[in-house]
Length: 491
Ligand SMILES: Cc1ncc(COP(=O)(O)O)c(C=O)c1O
Image 1 (cartoon, rainbow, N blue to C red):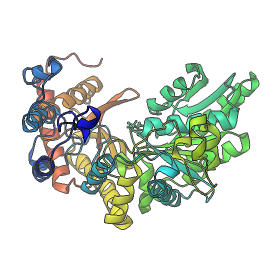
Image 2: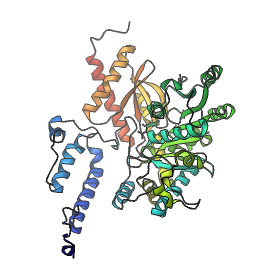
Image 3: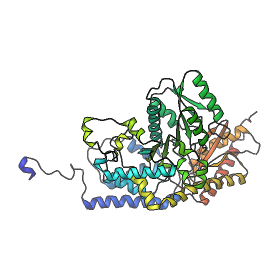
């Protein structure tokens, strides 16, 4: 038929298609590879050795004119990408914020990509829009937000914070940024300062208040700063609290901040990117009281809700604020206008064409159930508490901040009590652990102390993983201390 109008049928090559058998073979191969990886993950090194020689091919690869067999390309991916990757989902990866995903959500991501679901316009897929709305509704219940609240899925914590701050700017300031000031503690994640900069605020429009002795936002200093700014004719508009800081897991005093924001007519935004899911446990609920009073909340389901990377959520106290902030009405989208019970997610944030990210969280809630997910979160608390106990017992560590929200920070304690040596050994230990490959924990700076952090939110981490890691760190630290014999002492 095609030849009647002078055109031939597209070849499989130009239509970028595989036949059914080939697709199955390719797909099963990928699944087999992943299942083998999951089965062997705990025996692999946490951090693979970076071999620049092996990377050479992709560092300098010319653009391919001709295709290659998919097996060859997958093999190259395994060798050059997987083999040079630090496994953030490894049970002994305790650095930064570990990212432990789950297989159900991995499959959900494949389905969302495979069906290429466009989750932006109700009319194009009411089922997908409804699942996103339903999943946001479940999150609203978890965090105690009122029925009129709403939210949307975004790529991660940074964009969730940015989206919330854009709403705060619109609703609280009417988009007039002149003289406006936001407040946070010095323990804030850089997503906040970057987000405000992207929105057009000058760096001096964010006041970083020194944190208290527990690394929490200091209320008296915050009050002073607000009063001083008002005295100078500036316009305080927003307080950003953190529910689980990246450094120490500290939770700012949310209830007191909510009271203050009410008295001062300020927006309360909570960065719960890391810690908010702890609300599903008894311990977390206690630590997070007041979270339910926030005007907006950012969370990252790819952190402590075990989703594959790129699953952030922003919640706002009044659903209408999202559309008020983000709605545009181009002519070519007029016919998607709908009844009020329908929701067009393209107007709830800054993306038009957007992935169906809610599917993975919805599917994992459905398959595992909330109780299993709560138990998985609780494992993180238990492992951090175990780590703290073992560190104390070992006698060669100083606990700098106790286990909170599955994070404990500590520093090597040399027998001679030398501060510089303590900092030096602790600093060098991060690199030694990476080389060693058994486990990985990262470092940070807490005032004058160089510390290490264990963040234990991976539910597949066993008590033996924790014990083995602390024992290994102890051995390596002693070796490092012995190597520092010539170092001048502090005084
Ligand atoms: C407290 C906090 N906020 C924001 C972010 C940024 O989130 P994302 O990396 O998903 O953009 C992080 C990331 O670690 C975080 O810990």
